Image 1 (cartoon, rainbow, N blue to C red):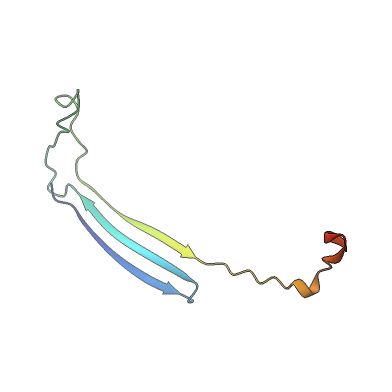
Image 2 (cartoon, rainbow, N blue to C red; image 1 turned 90 degrees about the horizontal axis):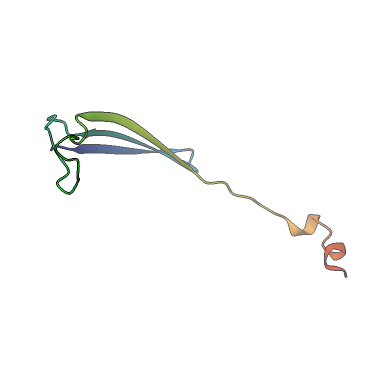
Length: 77
C-alpha cells in the first residue's frame, strides 16, 4: 500500500499556528486484509482515501493584576 502526507505550517499573528496537511492512503487502491482478523476473508481494509486536514493552535495569555483587587477581605486580614 502506498501512503503519503505533506504538511505545511503557517504562523498567524505570532500567537497562533495553522497546520495544513494533505494526505493520501492506499493510493494504488490495493486490496489488503488484516491477517489477524477473524473475518479477513470477508472484510478487506479500506480502499483509496485522500483528504485535507487543518489544525489551528493558539495561545491565550491572561494578565492578572493583584494590585487592583482587594485580597484583604478574602484572606480575612
